[in-house]
Image (tube, rainbow, N blue to C red; front, side, top):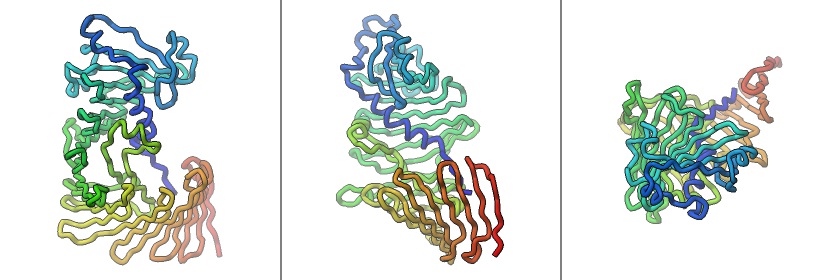
Length: 374
């Protein structure tokens, strides 16, 4: 079965372009209300309502809430008072910040809540987004912390099951030097799992990344990712937006246990795409090597060599960029072929290059299985 696991941070990527764009909207659209708040600190400023889109951008201001909610998407912008700030956001708040709440509605139902903290220079210093309609103990969303240059320096990911991930970035002269990844335990404390160190060539293009594992981990290949902090304005000016280079591997490769003190070297091209990754044990012996072949910003084949075993997966895509075919080989022999059409997957298994089983899956559920006799 060709599993389609879509981790939460992929959803976050789809939301982030619009989220970041709206944090930097023109002052003509969203005026700075900091001085007004200081003059009348006890006054609650009325909400402003806008027609919006799925990304949560303020497209057109409306005279009333009812007018905004007639649209499929509506955005409410609220200037919050200091005493209205959520407890878990207080550690990131400074008395000089202007807090703002943005609530996105779809078909009149609340779908996402965003908090923004801006400093006296109108620079966004915190961006917190929650995709559930209520803020509960088990939050579903993320918090991003920025420096005075709008560079992402720290981020937190929250999951409905209570899981939490923290990433801390170290920069030198606006160049990313390292990123440390932490997981929370049952007590709420964070423990470092691994740390990435970024290497550049003389032209300051990313050359490679060295990942040092601090703790033992079980790695799922479809969740290996490399994060990069970004400048908000750079994101707006680029037609292509992505904060993570996700290295998606087939289920065919399986998962792997990585012991502490192991290290992974990711070799990249000038666009940050992973060309090769090599896993070393604590004595610098090679455990495996994975090589990716790219075409038109998509991986068309990936090859894993571990000892005497060579696994190869080849992929084909349609004009929309959707994967429609996957072939899996072991030591040169075809073992599995998956064709995808919409929500239907046809999986064929081979032994000694001979077809022996065909299964059909609809929305991840097997609807038929046929054994092939030769």
